[in-house]
Length: 256
Image (cartoon, rainbow, N blue to C red; front, side, top):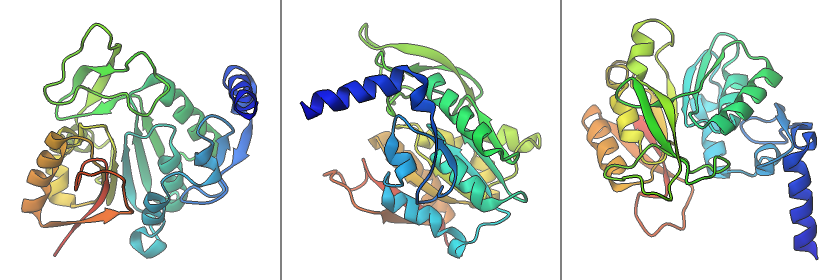
């Protein structure tokens, strides 16, 4: 009976304006921000990825006013909005989300919080500019829609939509974005290509990077890029993953 009640409530919140009811984020990196009631209530309750949130709260010794931050794979914008609250009007936050359903909610949360220094892009980040297929598996409502993994091909039962892809160095070169002090990277196996697309910025600015890792090619590619630049990695929180890196979050910090 309880399960049926929860399912009925979820259906009601999903299919009516009640899911957009404004609430405040209770704690975590975005504490105090305006948010929407449903779905992903762990976002506004402050219980989503507590170790990641604690890491973000602790950036810069707890003070990142004036920083420039990039959120690659922003989803609904919890971290984008949280970072924007913390960097203040002298900073800049850029959020990138290719999934149109997630982007619409990101856009709503950006409007609700009214930070002119928060820029949002309906695009994926990669090592080239153009378009690519976003694999959806028929459901845009998940956090696992992704650009194809290395070697992954689309089969008849895999849904896909075309999305724009951007090379981040290009945005810096034309003055659209400032080089970042911090990058949050969680792009479902495409992180190595995202970093390659910001290679020049990476070498000159050496930002702190918080990365969620999802595939062997992503892990190898990220390490190949960061280790020669003197980055040190540290696991954030703990994971049930049996793999030493895949399915885990790592903070990569430049040394020297």
